[in-house]
Image (cartoon, rainbow, N blue to C red; front, side):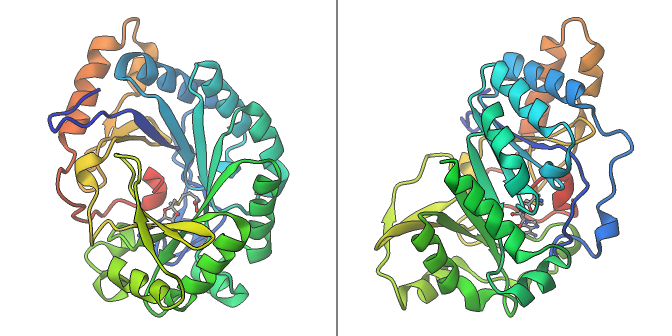
Length: 315
Ligand code: SAM
């Protein structure tokens, strides 16, 4: 569906569950904050909503996230159900803790790409930032994906005084594995709403660190990509500069929460439930109205911060 600013809204990001097995310090205050929504959709209901969004709102690409999508017991069924609808671009965003034992089945079901969240390559930093979880589990997960030939990207949220001394090490790891590292500027969401300024590491700071060891050449990214891409000798990296160089003007995403709310914009969430469409004999008209309303909330300039918790909307 094309919005008022001419953006083709064709990507759907689904938070399958709000439950997570890590408790990253910039996302929640403790593991207990990741509570399952009491009205979490079943896999069948989720698939029905995806079908409706594909048929009547032009969704062509799906990313499954959370919470932690690998904790969703019917994840494989969801992936294969989406593939059977004719959607071939299916990705997940995961912390990778459970990936090594689950990825083979997911790959067979139709999973195409995996974005791994990895904020540190240092065991202690990893533990401090994620509170729960083990670095070696995530690294094993990455290896399993590479062995299967899946497309892998690593997302690192860069935070001052926490992991900004690991920017170069992370890039060296990426180059050695043939993986694109994407550095994320910290977003003022959830518990960081209006409080993230002094922890932010800007795009310029990231580039400046990298340029001390690598020659950097900007390269073209997809028109609706959230990341700016660069080539370095032997590999690539990206920066997702939500503050320094906002990408709202080309944002093509809609978000669906685990309880069936559609969200058009992270800055102005205004969730609208589409759950009732499951019972609707002819959902098209009603859905089109909701999607139009939802995407009318989309910012066209920059992310302005939000009290919404990232695990509810899936990042
Ligand atoms: N559990 C999965 C994972 O860790 O990838 C999926 C959910 S997590 C909310 C999705 C992404 O959002 C992660 O890459 C995480 O680092 C990122 N994220 C969470 N809070 C953020 C913030 N305040 N700023 C930037 N990225 C954030």
